[in-house]
Length: 116
Image (cartoon, rainbow, N blue to C red):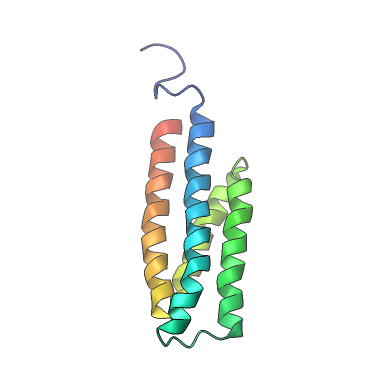
């Protein structure tokens, strides 16, 4: 293979952005769907905690649209840290934080491998 496409992808940057956006979109969906089960399972998820979860979901959507900018990838990492900190509101949010932090770390690894 000679040339500028060692990954074999037509547009590697676009492919990586798509993977990051998909990850953040799934994270948004999971966060929003997690509110009701947490409330039903006896979690003390008050109005401010629900606002925090919705805020994290909105931030994930905004970042998914901003992944063309290099700072958005760093902000995505900060988002995972904020979700981990939300574990202090309810343990299941901390569990989601661990899961999505691992997924985000893998996305960053794939980005580094593909884009160099």
